[in-house]
Length: 210
Image (tube, rainbow, N blue to C red; front, side, top):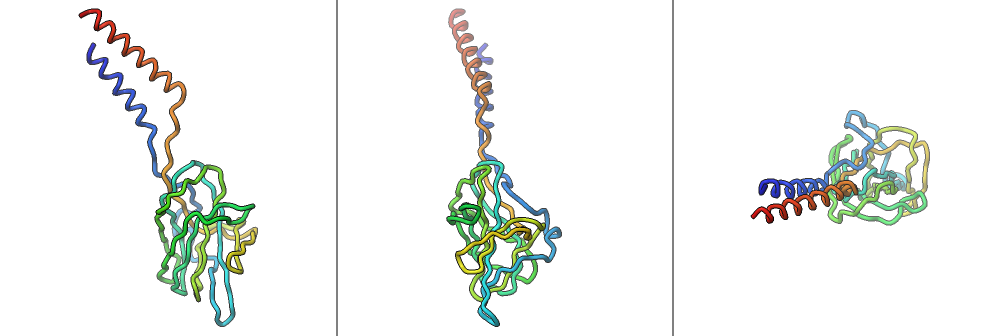
């Protein structure tokens, strides 16, 4: 009888332990560098031979509410200056307030994978639109690797002013985070209560037999 009383609390703790956090890919639009190939959309901020500025932003949303841990992007560089990668909220279908930003130093001349780690760990709400921005460094001419055509993105031809453009290439990136497991169902709580009552009953019976 004593053994039964020990098993019930342990099984309840095991069930409660299932409500933990899990790491996962919250969003991705590419599978491999082979899929991206050598295609890219230009990021430019040069003054010679002509003045040119172009920043890019891609919208995304997640299926789970989660804490951001990292972002992976595919970039191509020819200028060598660091670019700014930024996570932003949505403002009427365009990039809004910046939630976190990173300085990304690129190397090489072909599309390569780069990763940034979140230090602020903002919570991304499921079904909410966010934007990932790439802003060129000074006198730079880089590129953001692309995956598929026919998407709506945002482009800035003058720093800080975004406009939406349709039927464009989608840039390659993924967003990673830690999502909390679902809250136990009411039936699970009912099971906990039933197990507790059974434990009390067994304990009372044990007392009566002494």
